[in-house]
Image (cartoon, one colour):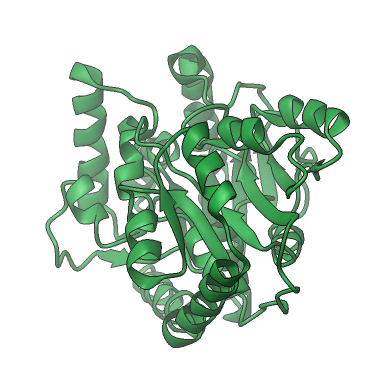
Length: 370
């Protein structure tokens, strides 16, 4: 059996959902070990084991003791299930360390899935940052299979290109073409965001500051995180702000499919955003909607070069200027280009790489495990 380990719950993780679906299609069983940090998930269920210790999302070093307990929990859970475990698929360094130790001791196969560089996301530098980077690279080099989300991440993770154990697996949605017809666009513009509600570094506070109360905007936000309370209050104060709370991937994408423009900004106050390869970039293509993002980031470079959205500077002022200058023709043109790019480049990606190459490599590991 394949055991997945991540320091969050699986409910809102679209990438995990694609793995689960691809393995189920191949008839391969799996189990998930996760950390229910904010209590948002049910206390376990079929196919999952949850660590229930509460911890603040993005708590950094303040969560150090909880993180240690999490790693002990992971190791013990894997050890208790060692007869069933064939492969451990660990996401990010905060779960991979315990999985790496277990696999070394129990002689199991390790899949190391790097969503984000651990030190970059947490702004860790100095000796601590260098030690964590070295550990992350070491695990990536020695794992039976290491997954990274874009070609650019070879450089970020200090990995030599061409390593046989490394597979680039982009964050392309698992659905087929699910574009909804674009309405007869015009003010009020329907602008949508679906994802983690980070208090800083994603421009959500700036987006709300600009859009709240504007008659030419209808802002729809869905997700969970530090800004939940802020959006609940804004929805009560402004009739043009709509907060939908946490949603599954399917529900969230359905909501976003009814928008005119999708938002996914990545401020460079987080070094990891220099290598951003987010779900949102591929989702805007699948849904056939233009994307508003940040200049100087990979999504910004792509939407600017390929014409599927707008790359703007950071801050509320830039958002306000973009809104003031938005035209129906621009919205229609970016939507059409996004749809075309999806059909040309990504509509078959899930079948080829998740159901195809990922499952093929997992099966090969299972066969070598006897």
